[in-house]
Image (cartoon, rainbow, N blue to C red; front, side, top):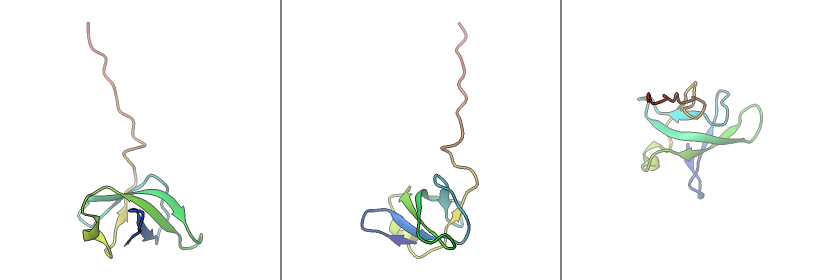
Amino acid sequence: MHLAGSGRVIIQLSEKVVEGNILCDEKGTRVAKVMELIGPVKRPFASASPLTNNIKKYIGKSVFATENSPVTTQKKFRRRKK
């Protein structure tokens, strides 16, 4: 993981991820959200937006992608009884 000048985090991927996936550390702490994929097809890089204020703590460490993103889940709304 590398911190770019724009404030985004650049991660070299070893597995396929999609835009919108959440990246977590080994403890399950949400670290970043994948915004776009860049680079070669065989071994792409992900440009991710940090989800924590202390992103420098995670530079150089491994992160893991979660299967489902909170963005894709839909909220269930309840109607009020009258």
